[in-house]
Length: 240
Image (cartoon, rainbow, N blue to C red):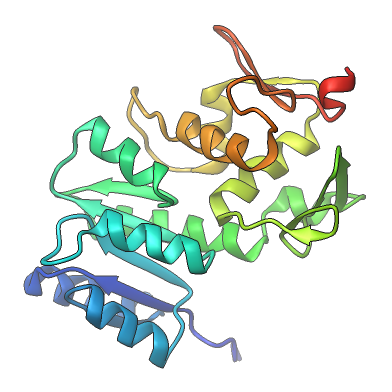
């Protein structure tokens, strides 16, 4: 008998019909679902019961989704799946830059949302096959230490605030040092679902990660760009 506690999802959207649809669908899929129409209700729901992930609409009354995503990212590492009726690439990039882990343009199928949400939750739990199989789960580079079992990044012993998407990307880099990983390779490993040919989420996530581990993000020494091929992680940094 499965006695695992169901994971809790918070849906923040002012569209009553969509909130109801997602609540019913995610509940039927085994989740406990709370909902909110704006930032005020979102804070109330989180204070009452901390969710495992947040589905957050970009266009909300009062504070918009970008503002709320920034707030959530400053205070927690909760996985954030952002929704928007505006599917232009610039909106998606901005959403990812402020801290969302993934972005889904409307209209979408509930099945795709469920697949993306489960992928975010798997990364947040650190239960990926690569992490479980790693014989050495602590990786050190420069002043940093990444524990792929505890899903924790520290710098000189002090914890660094990173999202689940950022830490999953870093895990892939540290487990494949001095090897060029193409954008397509990284997207396939990290996302595991259908994507479009212009998906730039990996580039955005690399930019966010560089801001946290590079002394000068404009001249990275750990996560290096190999023009026309992808990215290469060099654990030796500047000494290489």
